[in-house]
Picture 1 (tube, rainbow, N blue to C red):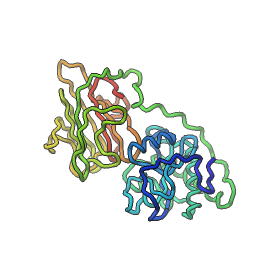
Picture 2: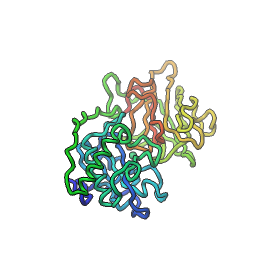
Picture 3: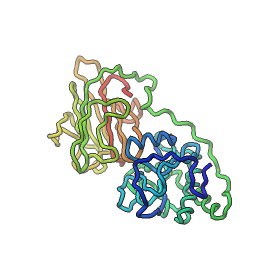
Picture 4: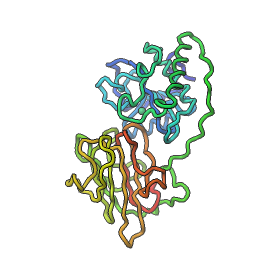
Length: 357
Ligand SMILES: [Zn+2]
């Protein structure tokens, strides 16, 4: 049982990386996040170890609180820079387990523990009674993201009410009234990327090699990747950074692709990959942030039909989003990779005859 009076978690699983030591800007608030997934602490750590991000606490679907980065250090959680005086510098970040895809409903037990932890942090660090945008901030206050989903939407008032009730009770040395516990949410269905749902054949391994690369916003082209390696290796992009151009080509047939940017929406389709031709040879606009990708593979006549399968990650959340098949929404329900408003930071593509992951 967490010791809220002394802000001690149920357990420590310190990540040991992805933070900046010290609090030169002080502690001025709490930032709340959703995981955009139903994860436990070990899963959070393995994702963060790979993507360069972190948070101070995770709260799982059962309300179990684990500390990953000490309060006295600055976690890489809010998508803003270290040393700028923003959310990473001045706040303590809490991740909450929720449903694995939209509408991102956060589990009731996670709300109850998270709100209690917010109250404990506000009291311990002298931040005052929990108040939205005063000392409790949504991740999206600090950077462009959908995080914390429903905690800044339909579940916000309930969460803040419980935080205030816990704070008042702790100040008074009492227990607050029992929460109106809603039935625990049913376990989220496995993510589409974890298996081939019925009716969708797995890839036989037959591929048309696809070569693709992303261009760093304000930087240069990153290394070109062919298909992808084992696990999460072999992706285009740079974790936690923003990208503005995409270039992709296939050895046979035609790969059409288009990108969506935060500034412009969907841009025109491109059908060839040539980094030196920024008009027709790649998709995107220099300096504009890619937050969506769509692809379509045209099989050469006489060959077995293949499709482009692709998926992405964003700077705002951990883990791969749903795998997308180029025939639109029939596989995962998604017809593009990405989430509008969240900078895309990693992309994987494979041209093959079935579900590749
Ligand atoms: Zn977040």
